Length: 299
Image 1: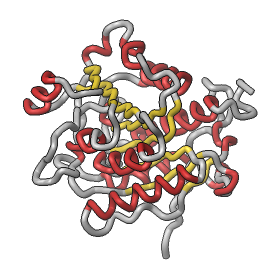
Image 2 (image 1 turned 30 degrees about the horizontal axis):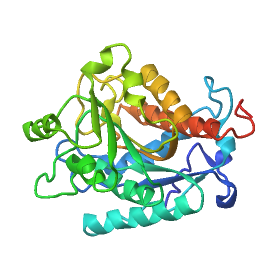
Image 3 (image 1 turned 180 degrees about the horizontal axis):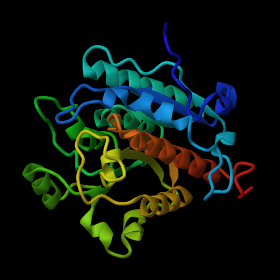
Image 4 (image 1 turned 90 degrees about the horizontal axis):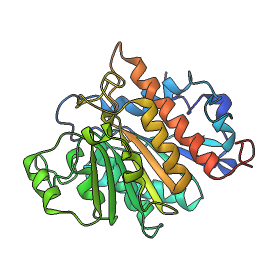
């Protein structure tokens, strides 16, 4: 007997497709992980945990689900070569963007991001990728694959001209040399630099009114907050400084789509699943408020 996959925030928060402003898509991709595994369980873990999230956001002062959230009942098919899986995601995200949805993709490993970025970039001139991550992901190839999770930003640069990378604190000597040489349109704010005042303003510079794709690799956060990820790195940012930055990002730019990737649910670490679900709930609320929808306190 099959078990029904939960919808985001539970059945009571599920909106009909035609009425929804937000579409949640799952992609349980686990094709190139190189340390800890488990990303295939990420989307289901997030959806299950989301059913325990309070519908009211105490900071924003409204219930984000009232913007209308539709959860795609069928995860993106990850069978076969990774190139085919990524093409399926590009097509699905493109369809939903064309339908006027704010698309939230639940991963799955980070290699899915360039496929979603490709869909958004082909519909939004001047799209900027904002990356929250512990790792630069700028390798051209890793372990024989140009579509590895370690190449996510390198492949995204095939589609966008600008990247803002935040929280970075781990990369190879080859990536270091590439960063030092200068990558057109690429700006990095290392994790240690975020301990200095004014980092958010530096990261947001030039983004006013710009279309943005936001990718959150959950290893961006300190592993004390989200330990259930394949390649945790010490020294990550905390919750409230990140929420403060994201609030400003949504207020000044046009975030058109986002993803949350690299959650690897683990026994005894359910707080990690819940934290990612809470983050997505916050992103949906910030999006709803940016549209000045009725009930968001800015109508």
